[in-house]
Image (cartoon, rainbow, N blue to C red; front, side, top):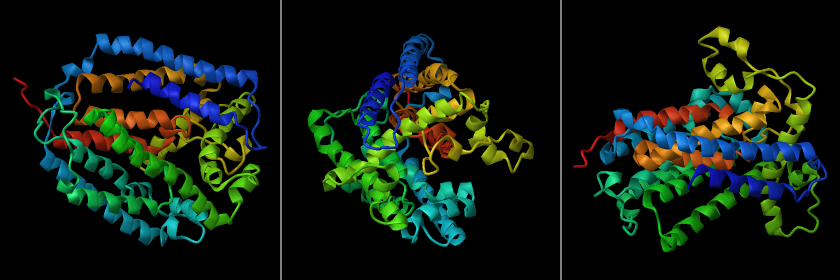
Length: 415
């Protein structure tokens, strides 16, 4: 479960998919780009090996009593979940009153999503989609064995969890999924799906039989959502055959299953292409020198501290690649900021942070470390797809996780 294995696996699969070259718009990878991609993976590998030794030798978090609370108050956690659900309900109401609709119900979902982003303030937008947090926390409560006050006391792998016992949280999760579907975003559904799958692995430590019962359901949901949501959104906005037409993919010999998987292929392969275009573009154009990486903070605090607006990035995505592209792996914004150097340095730094999260969970499996590393596993898988570091919700999620930990955790004397 080390981050190195997951990172290499995700990238090797993504590279293999991108080599299918189903679209006439995809440029072949030149030798330079192959070298940079392999350098980024080597940099992450070296970073993992270096920081794994550092964090093993110097587990500084163990000296901080605040970070090693090993118990969970299930009553407080339930209160927290209901509180987040209420905030989400208020956010949904405010979102609707400000925008007048939801993307899934709009005549043109793609156009409406951009209009709503302008009409609805960021915090309201975030609050309206808080189901992405309270659903995984609901599953954490359902997975957590009540009789084990402390994870350090050990969790019986064969102990059964009972969804019927927590019927209210099961119902709340279903309502939460419906509320997220209103935003026609596959990333949000994939986010909670992968968080829950990772958390089940970390909390329950299932054997093979248990895993074969649990994971196929969530994997099926993942595939269906990754394929169905973009197909529906594009059909509503542009009509049948839009995706094949705009990407230059010949689907005449595709069966229905292959057509259903096409959005997944486009999402993975074209984001590798976006990174290729960015590397080429910023060899001859001015770099952003860190401004893109700061965008989440300048966007949030720019109104409170006007001087921060001077640090906002300024670039034209349409000049880098086709206007309908919007993501380009986790390296894309760092290439905008630092150019070729990003392939050498950023994976090394990311490896240090992700390895810290992994070691923290291994040595202190508490509420914070379990959810933090489950979140990190989602981040690692998504590195092949988008640049999550420039999304303000990531930092809000992490802040919310820490505040939740302070509210629900408690220190238990093992002796």
